[in-house]
Image (tube, each protein chain N blue to C red):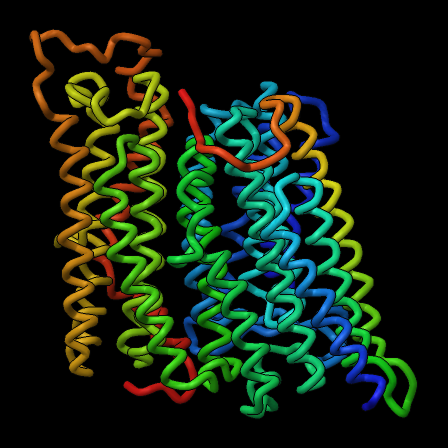
Length: 102
Length: 486
């Protein structure tokens, strides 16, 4: 079993855990954390597929992960702000129940 | 020249958005308007080049792929950019009144609005899988923020659900990008298409990418976030979300399928996408018919109309491509008009419950007229843009003897007629007791202001597309996907 295969397997497992958490979790913070777990799995995978070439590490893969991390941080910060705002407006931290309005 | 034009399209709204955040309030309106008015000057030089049958291509900072990033504008991208320009300019006219740039709400609205425009432009010109991911994420984040802008609980919940599903879909897309990069060693859309082999890995990557995009495009059964998100958002936001933001994901899907070897998924996958489209048409229309609120009805109509685009995958002919691209434009214009008219009626009547519409034609005639005209296009009645699109699609399906698709397209138009006429009939109904109850909770409804003008302008354009379809069809024909059946 090559080391790349181990990484791919690990990334898939972590991604799966993230998807499971996103679906099953009730609290919005947990859902957000699950998304972050999924993101980490993708970064591991990018590192694996573009990792070591005979000429050294692949710069494109590094750039992708760096950009990906920046986006993940920004999206997480935005989601946290939205969760806080939603809690202040509605007192809720989950999406359960029906939409009622007017 | 074209490089500057491309840069202008992306950076003028982006810089203006950032300036509006930092600048004093009274500077917001001039900056925003100036940025919006420069956009046609960016689009025109590109149009001249593409009209000659060429493609605009710019390698950013002079690096060629696979290391560098390429911006590319062909006829499909240009068509979508024109749709964006028209919708954005007219909806901005509405927003100048509904979100005055110097007000509290305007200060929140305009930066996001300008950044959303910049992101949509950047997405349409990107020809790189990862660049598309970045721009798709930007579009989603700006869209979510704009849904939540009013701070109403229902809108916040809708925004939250959209955000979580949107981020999940983005990660599916990113995972697939990683797999495709691993196999092909490039991110360039066209190079990926050339180098992709049809092994199991490629199929997994395509399945993940298509799933992510179907969530973003709100194709049944992955549409659950759309009705509330579009229905509860403020008027100009709903208009642009339905007209442009969902189309963005479909645009990437079409690119992926017909330009980057996505069709390697096989006929079975194409048929499945078509069946999902058929399901979307039927389910979306039936759900629209049973709604009790005007904006939710319009939102479900979007779910239905997006289904037509999916019929392109099983038909896979240039005739169908022409029809579907035309449909995206026609629907974009008509749906923006419909949402603006619905938002104006909601604002004037204090509620968008359908029963409240009774007698609305007397006090809010312009908005009812705009809704009805847009409805003509949505139903696909002649002589509207929607008619031309659906007629071309019917013809494409007919020529391939796809009788099932023919039936679905016809059924969709019939059901659309039901939900549009339901609204129009109520608006023209005589209120009981002779007096117009609409005055209860009315806020300056009867005036003819720029909000009503914007709705009417788009509705008239939706009809005009039917009379003046030739230039648009000629433009679409300049960028047909490679190797397609006629």
